[in-house]
Image 1 (tube, one colour):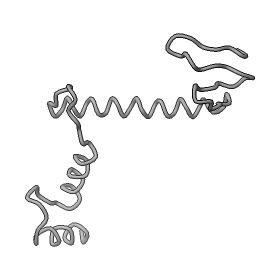
Image 2 (cartoon, helix red, strand yellow; image 1 turned 90 degrees about the vertical axis):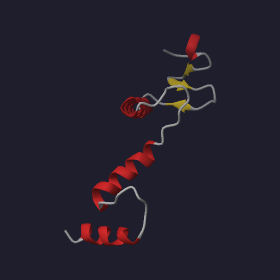
Image 3 (cartoon, rainbow, N blue to C red; image 1 turned 180 degrees about the horizontal axis):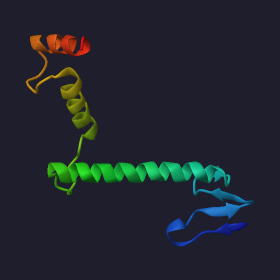
Image 4 (spheres, helix red, strand yellow; image 1 turned 30 degrees about the vertical axis):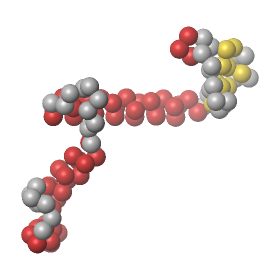
Length: 102
């Protein structure tokens, strides 16, 4: 497809001289689209993972913000450092040291 403007949801995109051109004027070579597909795949997987996390935790889907990063960090800290949820304190260092010596 050469020198064609796209319409519908793709309005603003065009094919010019064998390249896909975005509405911002960025040009993609055909081999660049393989990376674009990888990026889209990562974004789709992230969306699925976030949806599963919302469903597991019973979050409402009406604008509730899920801080997935924080949940993963807490889970990791509990596994690796054997830290309870009471917060950092004198026992934290002992638990970390005990976990490292095993």
